[in-house]
Structures are given as C-alpha cells and as structure tokens.
Image (cartoon, rainbow, N blue to C red; front, top):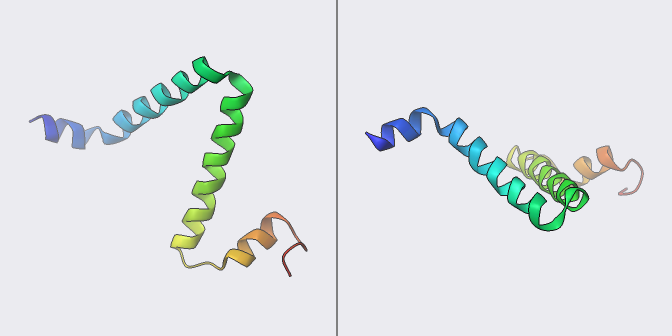
Length: 70
C-alpha cells in the first residue's frame, strides 16, 4: 500500500525532497552560493540530457559558447 501511494505521487515526493535539500543548503551556505549550486546542477542536467540523446558534445558547447570550440 505504501509503495502504491509513493508510486502514485512520486513527482510530489521528489519535489518535496528537492525543496528540503535546497532549503538546507540555503540555510547552511546562503542565497548566492545556493543559486550558483542550482545553476551548476541545471547545466549538468542539460548537458547530460543532450548526451543521452546522442548529441555531440562539441555541438552543445558551440551552441552555448559560439566560436570557442571549432
């Protein structure tokens, strides 16, 4: 029963745990450090998602920083 409940609301649970995690980081290190941390996580997720879809890393970096990786 508990597994079914967790499976049915897994998005909500993940959101709560992510919010709790980021809230603790905010309390421990401050707003700007937390913001930089979230930007790094987002960038890593974006690049990882592109690599999962078999895109070339050079093409990804060229979109982000045009002309630097030719």
